[in-house]
Amino acid sequence: MFVARNVTKAARLAVRGKHTLPKLPYEYTALEPIICREIMELHHQKHHQTYVNNLNAAEEQLQDAQSKSDTTKIIQLGSALRFNGGGHINHTIFWQNLSPEKSTPSEDLKKAIESQWKSFDDFKKELTALTVGVQGSGWGWLGYNKKTGKLQLAALPNQDPLEASTGLIPLFGIDVWEHAYYLQYKNVRPSYVEAIWDIANWNDISCRYQEAKKLVS
Image (cartoon, rainbow, N blue to C red; front, side, top):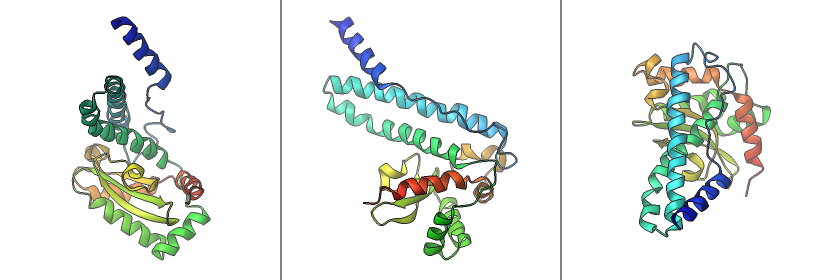
């Protein structure tokens, strides 16, 4: 009976599949001098990998708890799933949001930004200030509100995922956990956030905007 139960569990896990660390779309040195190789390697190989590992472990525990109808355990796993799942989601977007290649927002996205913030510079200042002002660790986001059809900014703590937390579709996220910048920028978070704009991948952000617009309710 014990063997059969474990075989069934293994089969379920095989069907579900495990989350894996996404490959970066550029070399670890590609974002220098804005983000150095050492930060990129640690951030991707260590921090993001840890979120992936812990998410897989939490999901396995969740499946086991569900198979036993262990409601207490299911509830207890909520914070681990949110933290590690959010960390995996957020970082997967973050790597794509950055690029060594210079780019600009699409005309459609540029118009949307200018209609809401008067100018791109005003938008940049507001998102920068919001992100720098995150207390402790967290993220600053440009998101899309599919109910209103408008762009919206948000700051979230820890690894809280934007869409699951606010309903906003993530377009551009800025990671302000210290592991994302401390080795290079020390405690000067504003310098790091300002520098991020020089490697923002507006091709990716613009594509996310176009896809998000299709979901207007």
